[in-house]
Length: 385
Ligand code: CAA
Image (cartoon, rainbow, N blue to C red; front, side):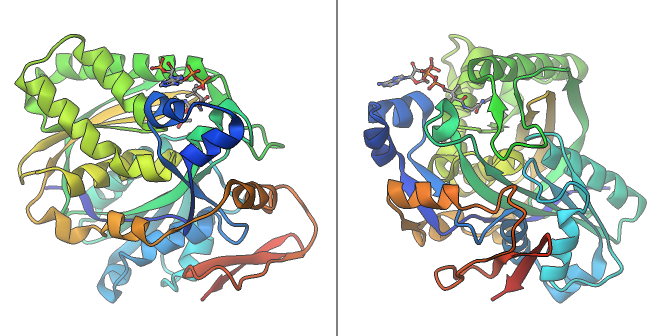
């Protein structure tokens, strides 16, 4: 039985900044951001958006009555949860108006949990092939104003339906996981911004990729030439380049060229949105599928990495007519509007965060399908528009 990704959709905020402008204000050479880090734009989050509204906006694009009727489970993967107890999957289920007879949970392991959600969903679908599972990877990457991590922030959600009729990617059974207790990136309960040992985190990432890919090669006998593309978790686009070049070394044959071209296609959306943590690998997959000549039957390798640290390499086979089952991300990104660095800083400083006061936000500037209207009696108030 084939099991895999049946449909995919992405949502992000309507606001972004140009990183050349950020570089000017921060007194940095813009080439550092656009070439050294490999980012051009970054999603900006107004106070009226969070992981629930973004996750619901992405999932809404997949929903039909038929999908709703077969849905058994909603798994939300996030690093930036909005409650220490309640699963954001329940808020999203409510905003989408889904049937009460579903299971709804939240998963956490930094940027890796979306992949765990997909693997758990495969197990559920194997037991009940008529049912589908909705996996939503939704995050806001926040490091803080004027920090080294600032240029690697971002926000967005990728929603995916996992089913026994995968129209995008049939996931193959072999995967390799690697778990080690590493303090490269973490966020204590009292913090709204991530703490990170930046350079160390990039080295751990590269090392994890080498280890899981080498083990995969030993287990399966497959080599680089078995792949139409390797898709990476992209906290920033240069990270994927570091991992791929680390593995290819000075190889410059046809296969290496194919993998380098595939990487470029997979980086296009991340360049414009930034890091979306749990969703980054899947935004890279969408970017690859929508910007590269891909054929049904092509094998893709996916490298998922979550600081802390967990890595996984797994593979899938592209299905016929896969594009018909994704939303057009580039068209969506072109509709966003640019904000100034001052506006971005203002929005950054007005997130609900850890504040326990009642708040009512002005919703007049937010035309997204779902909004965070404020907080009352310690409860977040969400609205459909
Ligand atoms: N022109 C072109 N390139 C330039 C340049 C210029 N004028 N000035 C600098 N650069 C290059 C540097 O040579 C460097 O390139 P290499 O990495 O290829 O050597 C690059 O720009 C970055 O510059 P710095 O080395 O000075 O790095 P920094 O101190 O600005 O920090 C960072 C970069 C570590 C990525 C930082 O942004 C950060 O901490 N980000 C958050 C952590 C992160 O994303 N880690 C990724 C792995 S962990 C993970 O994947 C999980 C997750 O999602 C968080």
